[in-house]
Image (cartoon, rainbow, N blue to C red; front, side, top):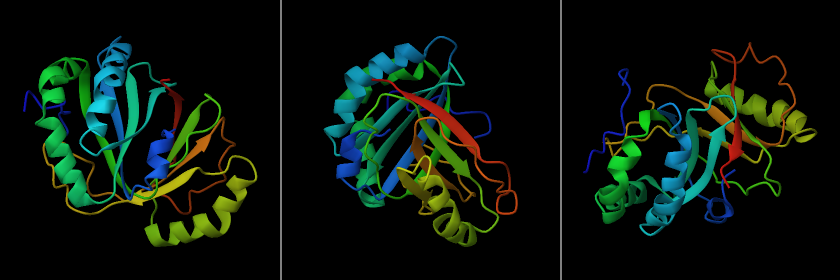
Length: 219
């Protein structure tokens, strides 16, 4: 597969099309890159991998620079279901675009295994080109926190920086194991546009402090 190792670690917003397609399966992918290689990967990605994936039925969502890490590239892609995901990934990574350009992409990467497999809709990109914030929470009790989010947290957020989309972990088996995803964890993830307001104290609901990614669209 022309080095579909994606430089695995030793520990083994989105554009409008992802909203229009109402994707049920969404990958949130965070790549740690070699120092100074981010723009090289972004140029290659925008030139070859957006249309290349779309051609096999993959909905390519937002592509972002992490504002707090110059060597991190974050992006999303979506699929209507897991069966379509398996077919589409096989078609892309065994197809001509990845065969030609995959080695160059891998050469920019130190780790591409930080991938959350999520369930939920895509979301419409903000009208501005300003930052997007992804908030990742690890609940003590997923169902209870989801209820707390809908009853209390979402209304609080809506008054300041309303969520553009909310996702939960998809627990289906990863049927394309050449691309690992993070397993054994439950998360709730939401996206907001612009600088987000401070979150309330969620320590009673979460295993650890929320992770917030401040992201700038690549285009």
